[in-house]
Figure (cartoon, one colour):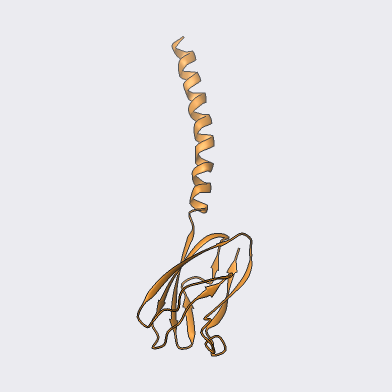
Length: 119
């Protein structure tokens, strides 16, 4: 009788682990990605130029002397004064290339633009 209980518990433990490990791995994939964005005249520097699809948090800091914002996938930060920061979270539903830019007139034309690759 004791051997049957031990065998049953072993089977149950194996089933629980077989279910839990992939579930935990899926959770870590969907936890999101953070990208640090530094804006100056007239340039953006991103800590990552390629990210997995899903939620991405952009931490934008304006290290320039002029006000700037950061816009991607239809969302944007407010215009940020020099030495200030803002956070923007965007969900990318599918892979692709997503342009980003500063929407202050003339800044994108001056070089404040680029493309983020989403895999």
